[in-house]
Length: 292
Ligand code: PXL
Image (cartoon, rainbow, N blue to C red; front, side):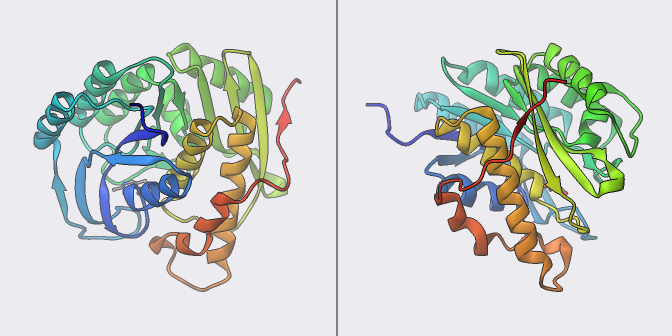
């Protein structure tokens, strides 16, 4: 019998301290009523954003054997979800997993975690960026931030972009394979201290925009939180613009809950304080159809 609870395979690292990757993804999706089956890519003492001398145990050589066990159990997944990947081999393994576990009506979300604010994350090398360009072709939904969109399209990072130009970028990214492309942290109005989430759905050829108020703080793990809420929301049957709205509102709330305290940013947002909001219905909706 098919489980009444949607099931997602989550291929991400487990970073012990700092609230990123699986320590953010599992609580968010569980709270949203989704069963998470982690396939850890690596175990780290902390995430790499702001911590030095972190320790890393690469699990690449064990991943195929874990997948083999899942194969023997004949497990099926309603979603396959990958994020930060630390080697070309891991990218290849995720690609194989997607090919093997693909099934009807499944959501395949690849969050091409590579960098932010114009810079690659510490361990990201050109080879990994090339690998990520190949992997996004296998996805149905991708969630690059603006920096990652630049890396995927091999464009120069700039501190401003017109919506019309970004629409063209989203179509180009969708041409690679994914039917839904969601770009976050898009600097559409740098003077007005806001950024936007802009998304394209190739199925109906519509573009959506949700404005985000600018908060003068960057917290690691918020990209993982955003992509997880989008996935949970789509798995619950929400439309794309509602999923975007839920994700923007949740991440904004998490950042605001944290910003009022003078805590080290590298420890991430105070997720534990805001998780229960994921159970509440949306009380305001701010998305716009971009038809200009
Ligand atoms: O939040 C993305 C992420 C995931 N995993 C690791 C990271 C980061 C970002 O810094 O370092 C290990």
